[in-house]
Length: 273
Image 1 (cartoon, rainbow, N blue to C red):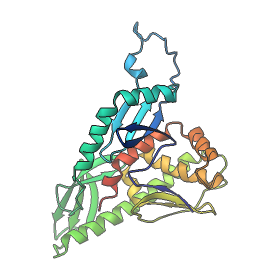
Image 2: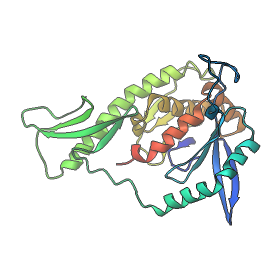
Image 3: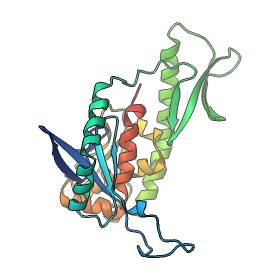
């Protein structure tokens, strides 16, 4: 069974490495998609900003180093840019590694943040004996209404929210699967999928082409959901992460690396319970 990991320390297809002192530091490479206009084109009487040609380096809180470069940048040019900022990269990694700002487990009380389709919502828990128990999105809030306030209130709220996510995940995943299937010409019919909460995987694909998706994925944007589903659909054609697999994924979603990076950045929050 192949799967797509939800762990923060996942990598992109291309990687580089450099030495700083006695340490080896690895970094992921993301190439921007080629622009349709010429590099020398003049837009509104002005040439494109030079900054668009630069290699942008970012060190993430999980100590992952990512270099985002123009589509035609060579590995040598990227390495040169990395080495210019080697000391800053090393210092940033050390600062993040010394921090212990872990995401605290949710308590499922009013004021906490919940996510749905890439947007943040403030949780509001209400006790209203005359109303039906429910979970609704209302005016930027995820509102949970309870008829009876029990001793294990947080557990009750969590159960209601989990079921709400599960119900919405079924509908959203079905919709996104139908949408991305137009790109997956190698897939015959509509693959079966089931939903199962997982700690370290967004999804998986069995050797029979059946998909399994994590309901927490519905907290991410539709673009991120499409990426995970397309990743799994590519496994129907290529069951491992071979070069053919990555070429196929790039063909159907050229910007998958950028989308994956966004999902990786939010994974710890989306999976937090």
